[in-house]
Image (cartoon, rainbow over all chains, first blue to last red; front, side):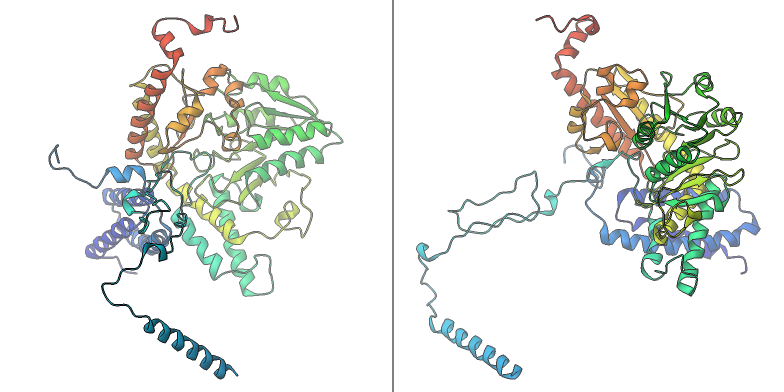
Length: 96
Length: 474
């Protein structure tokens, strides 16, 4: 496989983040978002050209796994966690 | 015949329709109350502690259904020592072998068997890698309890003729202690080593306890209640000096969390659990050294699978799940431990900076994902009940049904009242900083509330030393 272009790498990164966000369980969602960011940041700080194509391939597989897992998770996903119910509502003023 | 039956059904239904149409009422004629059949409302399918509005039997109308907004939120999971959630990546791998690849890994005559066998062996390799062993040393069992039973009883019974002494510590898991109790009933001489006040067993005590006829020393790697890490390397080197004495370690809480190497640590037998490393429940593994060979008597007799030590078909999907969990654990170990250490410090600092009279049980340099805190002058069980939004435990899950204080904390020399007021916070891969902040907030306010109610706390505030009071005066 030839070396993937910068666009395809960015596209894959976006896909991974989208797949991570689609988990319905709070803990899994947060974990996979932060993990994806961490792994890619590490890669970005040390982008050796011979690693790029391996990295791309591994993350393509990861994307498939995350997509499937997110579907299973959304089918069986249960109630929201207590910390989640406190979030979401962004109050603009203190009195509303 | 069938045609006639269906025609009859059609005819009778049309007749009833006509009858109903025959008693058609005019628009403004109300039905009298006596003709309304009032029935009791059916009970709700899910009983909720938040009581919904229910009509009395003499009320007409309909019952209010459960509203989405009334749904109770799920508590935060902080009991990663009891079990861990199955990692979605592990489940994804397992699903393939639960649905499409259903072959028996021991079938040698067709492709279904070969595919399952190669996947099971690949998983075996991942498990071996995480503890620095060879894939052939790994034996699948049903869990750490079975592994512990197999190793301890197997070694002791195999060497029964020549050696009659076995050693363990007082803070082991229940399944290890119970195996030793069983062996002592069978006539073995058992030594239960005491631990120091930080939970670590002292090497001098261990060396003094080893005799020429000692067959086995079993010491756990990471304690399940306090997170104390035993110095396995030193213990292994010490035991290796005594010929014919085997070293078993229960590493259910340690695998995938701290680096382990059976060669460096001179470990002869090790127990591994699947559901403590984000794998499935119902699977575990035992490491049994082959060079130099460790021989033990199997508990199960049968088809001779797993080197004859554990007969019975290997549950391929579970075994593959365990392997995948081990692979992920090894890959993520550095990141996970950094994350867990950060959250653990956040929890400990958050609680201790805002309250006093809090004791951390066990060695502070132990595994950071297990934080055992004693809240003085607060009853642990009532604190657990008050912290409804947090899934916690006061000790191990096996003994969480009883109100007895933890025997592990008693072995550490904790006073009875401090052992009664302990809580175990388990932090894992999927815990977030928001959850920790929420727990700190809740724990601080609840402990404060319970202390305000407590007469003991009042006396402490007044400066009375509680330990000097003679309670049985009257």
